[in-house]
Amino acid sequence: MKTILILDDEEVIREAFTNYFEDNLWIPLQAESAEDALSLLKTETPSAAVVDIRLPDMSGGDFIREALLFNPEMVFVICTGSPEYLVPVDLQTEVQVSQQIFRKPVTKLFELEAELLSLIEEIEKKSEK
Image (cartoon, rainbow, N blue to C red; front, top):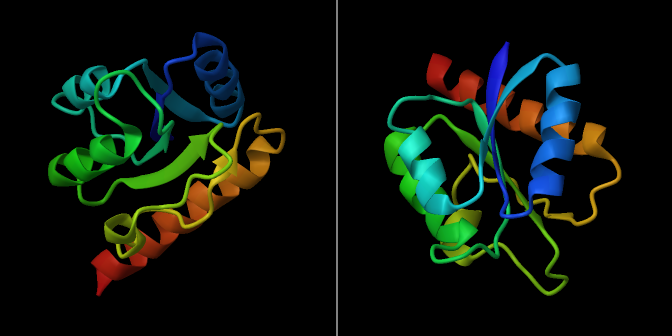
């Protein structure tokens, strides 16, 4: 079973993602702020994260940058309600960060999961080389 971090300041969204991923045999961890998520990374090593961009204090993008220092094998999918959001240039070069942005409300969670699994597989292949 793989562990996934769900970082979103909206409890309803965290719960919906948690229920989906639990049903699909993931171990979900929840955080409502980037700071809480970084604290979790001190003791947990999730394979993946679903990250909201607009968070109180530290942004989701800044969280991803910090999280990559903790766990360079972790993969990230961005989920945002901001229609104009684009992946920042520095994160576009990170193979761990999906270039596909999932817009809220996410109705096809299986597509989000498929993207995460694809990224995990890509990282595992690179580490085998």
